[in-house]
Length: 300
Ligand SMILES: Nc1ncnc2c1ncn2[C@@H]1O[C@H](COP(=O)(O)OP(=O)(O)OP(=O)(O)O)[C@@H](O)[C@H]1O
Image (cartoon, rainbow, N blue to C red; front, side, top):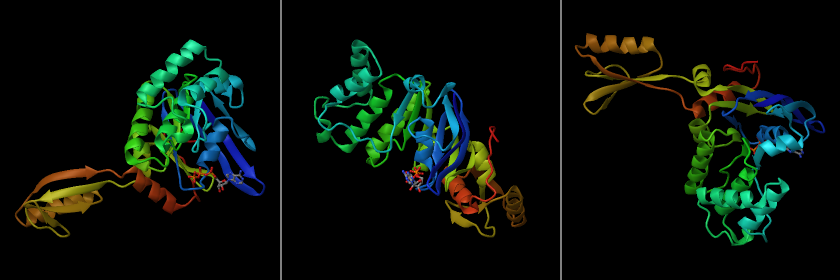
């Protein structure tokens, strides 16, 4: 559905994106993460045809990123979305519906339906008088006015309070369940983890790792085992009548079992804990960009 082939962006001598390559399947949710300045926005803008790449190209549904046909299939939500302050949500969204040649009655129904789903009230209030969260909801509604099947969302919940953030993330999840193909960037890795099928981790203009979450966790994460015993074993803490030891290998689990049995006790429970995306991200960041590699089924 989406193909990014070696997308590169130079600003003079500075290379903002060194060559992003990835593909996103139909109905998939793909997350782009990385520290400030990693090149996420630049990549997403090139993908959306809003920024001309210095080299490489992008396609959405087989259509070149810069074509009108492609834009009709796409909803783009920029990180910052200045709206026309004097307009109301309804006049603003009608204006964009018009630009996309959406017939008036369809646009009217669609915009109210979307604003209902987003629970946006005060639809006749000027955008300039609306809160940040309300403006973000209008920007999201704008990205959906042409009923696109592909959404590119740059930091959809940026700068919002926790309640509105949850709302926006849940709404994005709902769009994914409805079958939209979504590429989105976020700093909150918990959100990425909860929504995305696959992720790309960017650093200093490069994709340093990408793949599905399980594979990234297996490659860059660690599994921790929580072993609970009836008797004291080395490095264990007393907890609710048992002894709790955290180890990082099955060998260490077996060693703990041996220690417990030698002391006349037993292991009563073993729980595994996988790394979070945050752990994976920190491990990738620590390993630096040298020796970058791709993981997952789309390894290139
Ligand atoms: N128009 C421009 N001219 C020169 N440099 C630019 C321009 N736009 C972006 N850059 C630089 O390119 C790099 C990547 O920027 P980009 O906005 O893509 O990063 P990002 O990963 O989205 O960061 P953030 O998480 O802070 O939004 C940064 O160093 C930025 O300063």
